[in-house]
Length: 208
Image 1: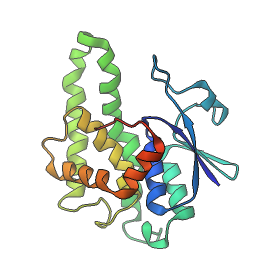
Image 2: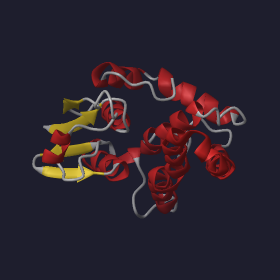
Image 3: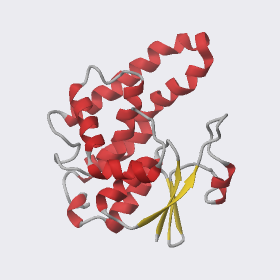
Image 4: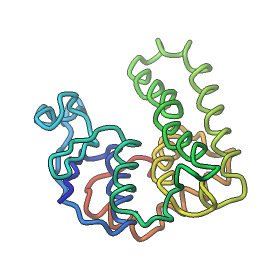
């Protein structure tokens, strides 16, 4: 059975959500952050040397990185029409956004998180960081448009990937100018599979 090595209050929550949406069988191996450092425990390195979450193990196949994990789960457990095939004209548009969520959109969010520990020393960085956040959130707003979902206006793995970006943006109050993204996030968080994943995954306060 597929195992999700799940760190509380982390990106792996969206992997649980995806699995719940697909009604795929899986087992959760729980890990808790250090109460002082907020870092993942060292024992996660027993699964993969980076010691990061999410990481999955499916019959001996260990996979890291949210987009790669999501793609694997979709390939193995989703119905054929859940994602595009390589022959579809929008296949690479889908792949672009799948990797964009972590590859580009999360970077300024992380810079904001890490720079917050610098206090006043971070002030020279703030304009640039928020400029980048607004750039990426604006792009996602344009991609979504008047739709409810990011791909073919149908729920897909893109929504689980992008949800973390929207939740991170909500923390910094960066969604207030983008009502379509606010509505999308509200829609995500009201889904029964999202709520069930929260029940199974434990503490999760990002974007709340």
